[in-house]
Amino acid sequence: MSTPHAGPARWQKGSERVIASTRVVDLVGVRYSRTDPAREGEFIVIRASDWVNVLALTPERHLVLIRQFRFGIDDFSLEIPGGVIEAGEDPVAAGIRELREETGFEGTGARLLGSVHPNPAIQANRCHIVLVEGARRQTETDFDDDEEIETSTVPVGQVLEWARSGRITHSLVLCGLLHLEGVLSGPAA
Amino acid sequence: MSTPHAGPARWQKGSERVIASTRVVDLVGVRYSRTDPAREGEFIVIRASDWVNVLALTPERHLVLIRQFRFGIDDFSLEIPGGVIEAGEDPVAAGIRELREETGFEGTGARLLGSVHPNPAIQANRCHIVLVEGARRQTETDFDDDEEIETSTVPVGQVLEWARSGRITHSLVLCGLLHLEGVLSGPAA
Picture 1 (cartoon, rainbow over the protein chains, first blue to last red):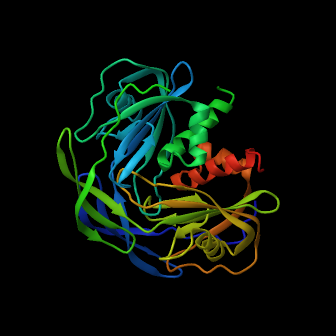
Picture 2 (picture 1 turned 45 degrees about the horizontal axis):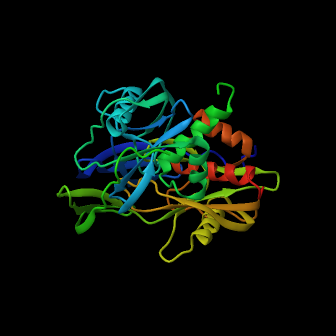
Picture 3 (picture 1 turned 135 degrees about the horizontal axis):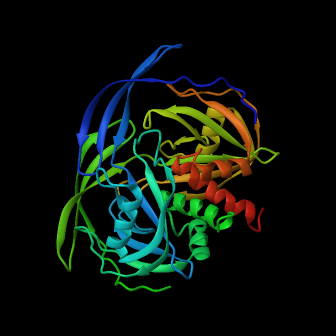
C-alpha cells in the first residue's frame, strides 16, 4: 500500500440553515471551515432518517424480492424489502417490521450484517442491512399509503447474476447483496 | 420463482414544482396519479447530474483508493475516485478525467461495467461504474476547490475484505466492488 500524498485535513462544522424541509428529507446548508490553507464555505447536506434493507432467505435459499413503482426514477424497481427506521427503533426490529409489512414474510435469527452510507459526500444518514433466515410467508401484507408491492422469491445465485447484469440497479440493494455474498461464502455459511 | 401478488400499477407523472435549487441537487415536488384504486399526491424527488465512479486497477492488481473529508457524514471516507459527469460528457470519458484529476493515475482500456440508481425511491440520477486497467500515476493531481485527496493503492482482495468488514461504507463504491468482483471471477478475467 503506497500513500503518495499527505493526509487531508478535517474540516470544522459551523452554523447550519435549513433550506427546505419535506416529509422524507431535509435539505440543509452547513458551514464548514479549515486551516492551512484557510478555507470556508457552505456545503449542501441531505438529512434523512436512517433506513433498513432486509435480506430474507427462505429455507430453500431463495431471496425475497419486491417490485414496485418508484417515483425517483419514474419506473419500476426490483429490490429487497426495506424502509425508514422509526425514531428510537432498533435497525433489526425495523427490518423485521418492514419485511412483514411489505411481504408478509417472517423468519428467524434476524441480525445486522452491516451498515452503509448512501452518499458520504452529501447525505448524513445510514442504511442498515439485516439478514433474516428461514423466511416464510406468515401474515397478510400491510402496505403504507401509496405502496403496492409485488413479492417473489428467487434463488440467491440468480439474484446475484441479476445484480451484475443490471436487472437490479438500486445501489443500497446491491450493497446488501455484497454483504450477503460475504456471509454465504465465508466460514459461517 | 413464485409471485403471490398481482403486479403493481404504473403511476402517471403530472406537474412539478422546484422546492429548492442548489449547486449539487434540486429538490422537486412531482405530482403522480394512478387509477384502480384512484390515488394522487406529490412525491419528493432529488434531481442531480449523473455521477461516475472509477475502478482503477494497477498492473499488480491493486485498486486505486482515495480518502477525503466528506461533509455529508462530517468525517473521512475511503472511496474509489469519481465525481459529477459534466453536461454532454460521456461517462467513460468522465471517469478517465476524474481519475486523473483526483489521483494523477491514467490507464488503458477504460470501459463501462454497469450503472446503478443511488436511490430509485427519491432520486432520479444514475451512477456509472467505469473500469480502467494498467493504471499508473502519470500526472499531477488537479483538485477541485475544497478538495484534498489522499491516494493509495491496495490489493483487490484487501479492498473487498474492507468492503465487507465495514471499513468502506460508501454505497456507490460498494456497488462498484460488486461489479468488479463479477468481472474478476468471470470468464473474462
